[in-house]
Image (cartoon, rainbow, N blue to C red):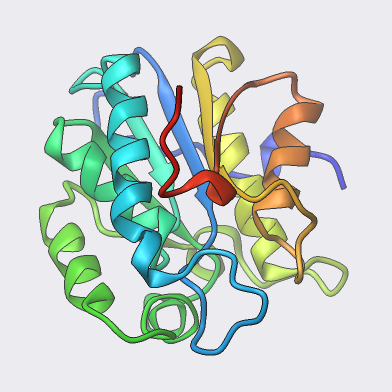
Length: 209
């Protein structure tokens, strides 16, 4: 698959076409479903993941002049969104389905307070989440919904200028178990020679030296 900018309308944060200093694009693993074996991102590692994301945004000096793009799934997406909003970063959620379907598929799939956290994030947004079916039209027969959303996120980020793109991924370095996962986004960003900051999910809870 290749990115076709004309197929993915640009995301504007306001009617004056505000220009961000950088676009912080995020993709990361969801919290493991109960009984996942072997574990990849268990719930007990969420605090460590939040700390890694927070440290990364501090190192980038992320703030109100930046735009953040992600989907909003339980796990990495929500942790990233919360950290961005704490720093005044403008946040936009782009989702592969209608919001109701997205919440069923990607927010309430595990136990915990993820739905409440998602709703709190949504209430803070300047603009509501955007759904691919409404913004892009029907899904082509030869394209997976998650893959299309990844391409939409990436193309929306790059529309502000490839040099502004900073891609942050919370990833185990492996391949995707299903289409359109974090590995797919990493591969697409690498095709565009974008800047990648890899937060290795396998190192969560370890002390870095």
